[in-house]
Length: 339
Image 1 (cartoon, helix red, strand yellow):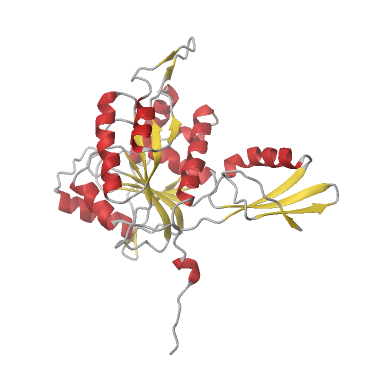
Image 2 (image 1 turned 180 degrees about the horizontal axis):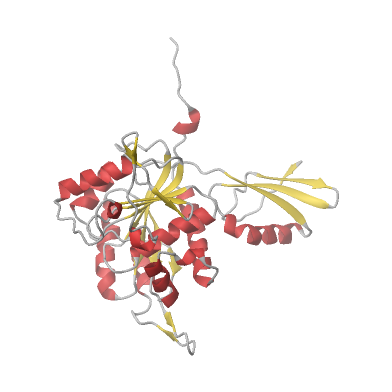
């Protein structure tokens, strides 16, 4: 058995083994993040590098990553990714739920926490408006659908009932939904953050073990004004941003195929350059996304180009997170010092 060293961002190049089995070369490949939807592409890539037919066995080992000093990581939740914007109406919740499903499609155990107390939209997006969580062992039982676990304040009140609460009560409610929900073992918990950069966001960042954030924007200047503030806030609080997602980037006419930049062009590129961040994906303004949202059947459940964009986005988000400092405390166990 020999070691094969190949340079590919999705592969743990220090952990690839190769051996001959008759006429077929068999590889065992380790990845540090889930990428099931990319396996065919990776097999083609490896086959081209070797120059003959191969069989590949992929192993994925998702490691918890460090959180900011003074915050304790939740034992059964390896990583928390907050989907942010600072601006309402840019499609943050739609992005959060489709990112969660795409991470699941790639082989991860995933949950989503809807932290927008004043305007929870996740129940509508997943078709769970009628769900009322049961309580077991003094903990909420999350809504399970599409292979992910979901918790939202929208499950606890009527859809038309407003949450007329001060920030201190909202923060207590968010703590309870995060800590008192039976998540089980979660590789990635996606938090759909509320818009803005106020007291709620500050408290969440100081108390919750958020591993990293991704930022959603639309191309127009009016959105970028608030998104800039959001990115700057997380930078000041010491929480890394994995990159920017541009939503409603272009509109493609369903009749003639003409491409229009309805909300402007190049806004997210300028934002990425300003903050030295990667532009992770550009998602179109598409009627299928709107219809799927209204029907509670996210677009990533279908086979289309938009699903492909989200699946690639999920892999890239997980890959970038995998490069952050890791927390090995859960696998090292306790160390007893004997005098």
